[in-house]
Length: 231
Image 1 (cartoon, rainbow, N blue to C red):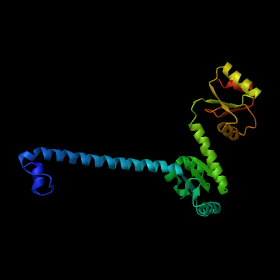
Image 2: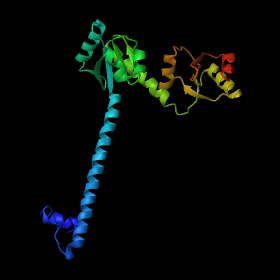
Image 3: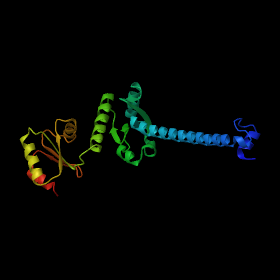
Image 4: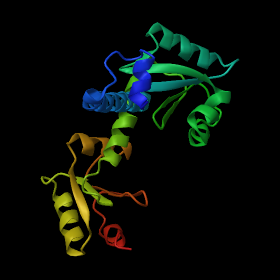
């Protein structure tokens, strides 16, 4: 008795019947059953992958408030977030103890926190100290904008010239950089990106020249310093 005959003998599947004339029907039903099993397995695997991706993406919407027992400022920060529904803008706030930072967030974050509480961690950015809710929101937004700006540097240039084409010294800096063959990117100082660089470097005027790989900053037009960027 073949496999399908055994199934039919046990009355497991009424669709299978013994007999030479039904061999083709048995084969077709068997193939369909195998296909159904394969489809179910694929669906389960995809569902598991989607769940994993969702968990990974959800990490971007969570900030961590680091506290420790006996710290009055950490307690106040926690109470402040409770008042705001444990939310900061579109992000959820999760509270963890200082002793858990390394195990949950890693040694690099623990180094940035440096034992200070309260500390607010969003992605890889750390905001230290007790601040008003609006200030936390502003600081986190600025930190993440700067991070996105550095990660989305489409030109890939190491040297940035932040300035305005209406500025005479900016034009001189641009001409000199082109003359000596510097590979640079011009960023308009009044653009959101330019304004962030100006604020981050406490620049009150332009041109502002940055060499990203060495954190070199040149405020204003300085011929000697610009030429040294070649080195």
